[in-house]
Image 1: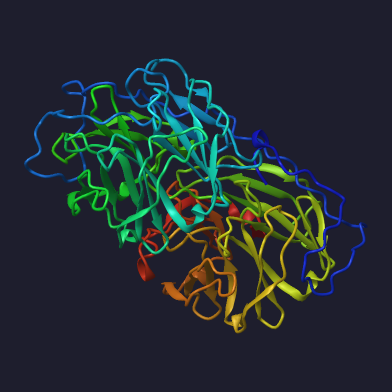
Image 2: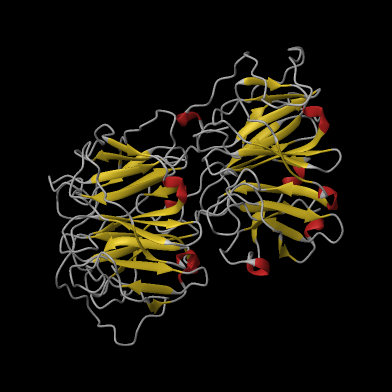
Length: 589
């Protein structure tokens, strides 16, 4: 289910039997469930507010920085050698800011006309059905005066377009597959000293690779063969590239850990060892869910930082590897789900929750990026979604960035395109936690009545599945299986399980392998989760790229549990209150 602006897969009467389905056969159309109504977007202006910097901050404009920095930091910024901005679309010498709202619309905030409302910016797609997983401002790769933009699809296709105007990009000129081998790509700027912007890529295991720029764009290959330049980078939850923090004219790397420390890796200009050892230059950065660098017309770097509540700030680089006191940038950024060049991994697949009443009404809540939801929308009237229908809101089963509602009735499974197939009555629960096979498409887990868990790999069209794969038995010790995205911080979808006795919470980390999709379990909650009569995985509603959980207690109060990026019993750090009144619903999905 997705907002109306982005469109929705139309219902179809065609029957497509799932490959490998037990007892598969055509089901009667009588009593088939009605597709849910399209859900409108929040009736608010979802554009972020703020004026991009074009020069040094005015005296007295800064508020005292809450984050620790070195005692030797000067009072004012100094600029020596400079680096070029990565995304100067309006040609004024300063970076412009590209961002996408939770409805799927992309906007450009221009530095040249700061008082003008941000306008929609069209980004070309290699595949029309793509909802980009990430956007990377690559810099001017071929030195023709116009910046390039890299788009990353969920299936690991990296594509190149040129931002030749403030209206949108040109068509896709180059594409390459296989980039789902990495959980984070960073447009790094020139790290090798040859004047060509480079690309960094981090694997799920934390290895870091450099793809040197070739100085070409268009249909030519923009990057050369990769060179491994580091390991252990999985310890960072945000990585920023493409900016210079020590005024030597070479691009540096800034990284933050889930514990809040910030580290600076100064660039060397050497392709085999492109940065020096990391030096801690700050702490307390967990108060921000996204960071992104901006370069002004003087070559000065700023770090844009967004708080959970949606207010964004700017930190100026002081030219010595430190950041100065912050300035308020603007509000309303809780409606932004993707910043081009953002430091954290981008979430994909689900950011919403559905609630079903005892009378069979179905309501949808679209997640914002501030830990809460927009106002609810009725998508199924009373009696249309009675308890006879088994419901599952699966993380996206296609390239679209939204959940897909699956329904079971009389053993027949229905999806957004209509009937999928019969034989599903052998299962007592279905869970769509996201991509378990590393092809980018969300998959389906099915628990049978003998407590054996099965994997149905999605074929990426929100309709068909490949032959089922046995995951394993013994799952009867849990009374709830759930998940929607990454819990452990490595970018892979994970499965969460709640103990029947005691209510302890466990995570089974996703491996990316269809043959053995789940790793060994790790306890992430000591107990008490059985106090929630409703527990749902809602995807990322806090804007940090990790999947959140929502639990409702007997009073009807809903609480949010947001992963920190740390492991084990440090996975959650307290809980946030969403609000009361959730006993209106008998179930959440």
